[in-house]
Image (cartoon, rainbow, N blue to C red; front, side, top):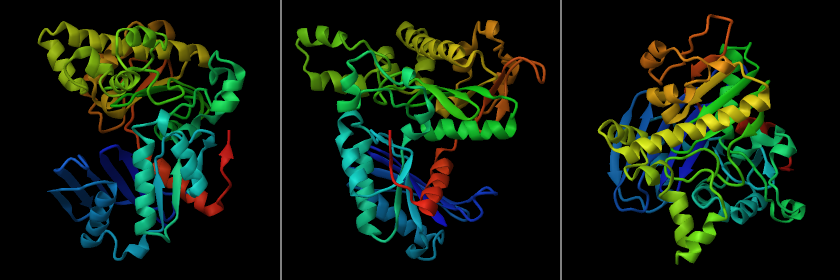
Length: 406
């Protein structure tokens, strides 16, 4: 089965194309991958990499449908596909399905539910809906699967899912913690079972443009730092993370309107807002190294946010066997990893600074100071969300179960 896995942003389109033959026992072959950005902004850059080609260009791509059309043509032109009919399925790393848990075949009911939850996932659900509909129009005979990010977190105890709100809000409006980054944390759980099978209790730190921390026991999610939406939890690059909702009253009384407040909290907050420099941790670090105290505060607040959740999840798991860093910052942020692991020796978490300094982030690396078989292992593990979604897509189309409503 040949599966295209799509990963969408509001103005971006990325994908990987897998040949899933033997997916149950071997590593699927990556046939191609590509990306396009700045959709609808007049000057989009795009790229396609296959085994024998590396193409890049610029085009005026008006929307996700235009990006999809360009990349399908490139897949044929580069020979990654001989004909479009070779494409057996399309999988989406979908974000918010509300009550729909796990991976499901996309139909009108799934699209309608995603639309209902677009108000709490404004940066995620609308572009996914647009791409799903565009693929449906372009390739009406190709089945599509939505692998919802929240699906991995269905194993979290209800006491860690609910807020202290009237109980009927849960049933009527779906107000609870859903958890996200499910594909990434699921991959970390799967990969750690292969490279460190003795580590049954794992704290997985996915740190990048979007950030979350997950407590995992025996491969299953026990807690996740995200909440009702992908806005909460740990500091993000440009999203607020944890925030006291009653602070909204102060902003409203100051004359700000809700649209402006939520746009700011969703796009101009986090590292970007607090530093006043950038949403890119590398740029914030350069500013801090140059003496910018506001940038330094943003980095310190980011790391304290991560440490807060690690401490919480040590309680959830009764300790941990491994701490794993993944995502752009987690894999490449040596200084951030060092700061997060500072003074955690009481829990057996001790970073080896020399190993940390040489960890490339592109390869799996163990960076703790513990002797083999002792203490807590600290790993850098590149994630592979698309591989997880491809596997889920194959599973769904092999059995086509009904949607599970949590």
